[in-house]
Every structure is written in C-alpha cells, then in structure tokens.
Image (tube, rainbow, N blue to C red; front, side, top):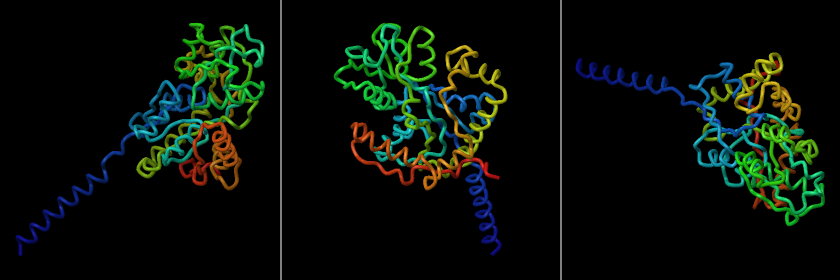
Length: 322
C-alpha cells in the first residue's frame, strides 16, 4: 500500500510539473507584416516608444503589398496591415481572417503622379503609366481612367511593385505612376505633379489590420497590446509631433520637416470611431466593403463574390467607451 501511495505521489508530482510547464510556456510573438506606408508608421512609432517589445510584437516589413498578402496567405505571419481591397482578395482565396482595426482612410495620400511634361489626365494617352497590379494601384488607376474617359488600351501600362516606383521614375521608364506616401512626396519634390488622388474617391481606400482566425485565441493579449500601442502612438504624434517626426523620418525616407505633410491626406479613426466601424450593423464600413467587392468583381479584380458578413471583430480594441 505504501508503495502504491508513493507511486501515486510521483505521478501526481510529474503531472503537476507537466501542467505547470504547459501553462508557463511563452506565447510566441505576434508577427505583423506591412509594407512601407505613412499610414502604417504609427505601428513602428509605438515600437520605438516602447509601447510593446519584440517579445510581444514582431513587425515584418516587406517591399510590396503583394508580398504582404502572400505572407498572410502562406501563414508565415499571423496579422498584416492591408488595404480593404487586398483583404477581399484574400477572402476570395478562402483565407479565414477578420479586420480588428481600421488603421486609416486615405484622403489624398494615394495619387497618380506624372512628370512635368504631362498637364492633365487626358494627356496620359499613349504614355507609360506604372502601377502595382492587383492591389490599391489597380483601383486608383481604374478610377483615374474613368475620370478622364480613358480605356486601358489608351495607355502603356507598366506593372511595378512599389519598391520599383522610384527607380523606374529616375530611369525614365515611366511617365506617370500610381503610388502613395512616402513615394508620392518624394516624386513631388523632384517635379512630379498630382493628376488624381484618393480624395476624389472618398472612402474607397481604407487600410485595416487583419488577423488570421486560427491565431486569434492564442495571440489575444498580444493583439490587445498592438492595438493599444497604435492608439498611444497616434496620441504621441499629436502631442509631440517634433519628436515623433524625428523618429519616423528615417524609415519614411524624408526629412523630419516633411513627415507631418504626409499625414494631411490621411484620417486615422480613433478608438471610438473604430468601435463604430467594426460594428457592421451600425457602420458605413460594411457598405464600403460590399460596394468595393462589387466594383472589384465588375473590374475582374475578383473572380467570384465574397461575403463580408463576419469580416470585422471589435473584441481586441481598448475599452474606450468608459
């Protein structure tokens, strides 16, 4: 009997150690993919200010939106900053994800920029126009062509990933390009002119943070820390613009004095606005997503209809209503 009790005690002891080991096993960092874009920069500002650590959040910067989408699709990251149209494309491919944050709404920060010799959209006829195919670039290009009553056959379209925009411009391989800040600002500084921008298509270019559904439960605390850090960074940008600009300038590739200029064409919804946007039953975001899905289907940027019924999840936002 004593031997049985002794063995039982040993089993219980090892079981306790096993359970404790399972409980104490650290959660791996939440991997968040982005490309370089002024709207995503508050995520990096939050890291710079210490609002979260590399043990919690691992920001993974990629050189194009297409590669960010591929990383989500392949499961090499759990979360990503993407435009709403890119999210719809992933949903079409059967990737289960949800929007947990509306990062920004573009109101001029995305633009079609042309060289000085081109005076108007109509003058683009016969010229070389660069754009990032399959993403926001295609949406913006389509809107610009409609505004000028142009057809794709009227232009010499040059597909380019965003990391190729500057080099193609400098090498005179294109006459105009659909791009966004900070590249937009850099092209304007060397004589480029804006012929069309996102303020002419209000509400169409929306940047969001998406998370794969299979990662949501185990990464809950890291997600909450990421979103809290985003709002804290926006608050810091408003209260300490000089220091924030200095911290962001190197990554954006512009002098600190020009950083704030890039935010004139962006709106950052605050926590309360996010809660309203992510509650599909009460917000305009559902209508934006549905109309955008119809537009993409009509323009053959989607090959089949996608449902946006369960697209959003406000559960990871800070409790900003109290």
